[in-house]
Image 1 (cartoon, helix red, strand yellow):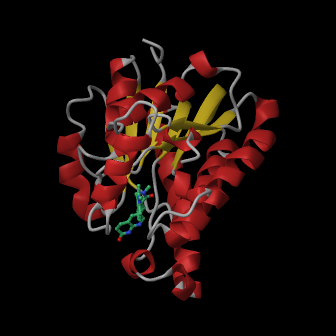
Image 2: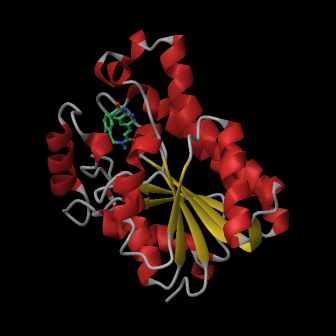
Length: 256
Ligand code: IMJ
């Protein structure tokens, strides 16, 4: 029960395959009370039924690409709940054509969109939460990243650039918020078949390579990534900030 009596905000849940859902389950099983944000007013009912298993939870629609929407949502959350102890940012998006074409054809608009949604939104969320005084003492902010930030993976393209920006932002935010006792980290998850992996070319062969080469010789689950997120959100990780922690069966350490 490492999150007993903690109030955790989970941003970016879509369905029961979402990493955000795995993290919600892990946090809930560890005693947390949960607040969710999701994208698209049309998804309200679907999300509400998805989170109905988490007693006392509530979901708010929030388009994280708009700072004003983040501010509005956080103000409402503050009115409804008071201070929160942690935030999971599980938000990313690139246009499919930019994941399908060769990286060299990335458009200015597509590049900007991917970085805006996947990296800048994390800075905005951290800043707005801080400036509204929404975060309790010793709060923890966590995001999700992928190995494609550092190494070339077929088709990851501009998302790799966006994740590199996100990981670097984790370090600068950790420096800015550290003096207030607020920690900022990210989990670099191994590949998982979520909706964000749907339709991605050769995804199955990437899963096969992990099974063959990773020290643990298997892929990871959203539950395992969720447990790592719960650890970073909890006081069990009180001396850890500015870090990218891999939850990937050890795949990233291999040279071949
Ligand atoms: C995504 C694209 C290409 C290769 C990929 C991925 N690999 C993995 C992913 C190897 C593991 C999934 N991943 C880590 C992501 O960050 C996915 C981001 C993403 C996925 C989509 C698909 C649907 C869409 N836009 C997207 N934007 C971001 O329209």
